[in-house]
Image 1 (cartoon, rainbow, N blue to C red):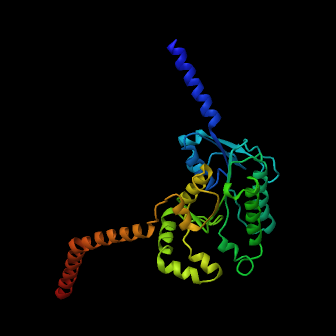
Image 2 (cartoon, rainbow, N blue to C red):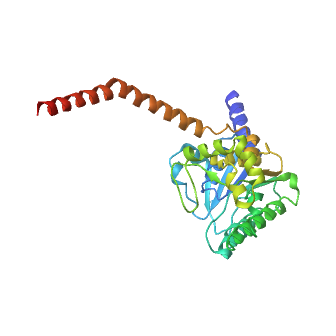
Image 3 (tube, one colour):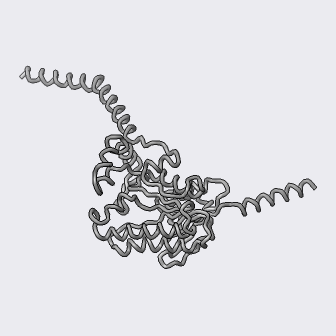
Length: 310
């Protein structure tokens, strides 16, 4: 009898967990930011995670990782609206494209995201979208080439779609607005990307008071270039937290705000680089003192003796 009771309780618990699991769909879930959002959500209890992307394949950087088995990886033609969004409670879109064709940029950033949010079922608890800094948007007319307008117009279209997906309730819609995102182990050109070590150093440097003050008073793209970049881990953490409702709806603009939203640790790339340099200089100094100088002196004395012998 007690065995039947235990079996019934276990079965009931599984049913309750299945029913109560928060269903989150990550659009662009195989991408640079999206895949890391999937990882963070998969590590949470009571969350069912679906990735929707063009390829539908597990990203190379995490192939074989245990958490990837807890994510449903779906392939979808987002541009043409043929999208199975898995009937989610929450949609997080990290989808974005770069290039030089204005119309392609508008379609890739705007139409695809609009189709994804529109296919979500119209009854979302929350929506999250990774957009672009308002300071970069302000450069559209006077500082950026014409084709870049397609990128910005597409991002604006997607922001509106994210808001519409929650019935226009801004308290349920979180828009993340970074300038430049860094991370990973390799540099890239398309899209532009720098490594964790390099990006962390730049973030720490540009987060200092003197650079912040300088950025505040400079115009256009100079201002944007002087703002600290954000690490992919920080923006992914912010997106995952917003999906779970840990961050309220609204706009999270810039690296400082994103790091603060999830208590992400301050960048230490510059400090680490200086410490490494100091350590190597000490090694070189010790070598020179113990071996380099004596050997050089011995070589010098030997040369002088040979010259005098002649």
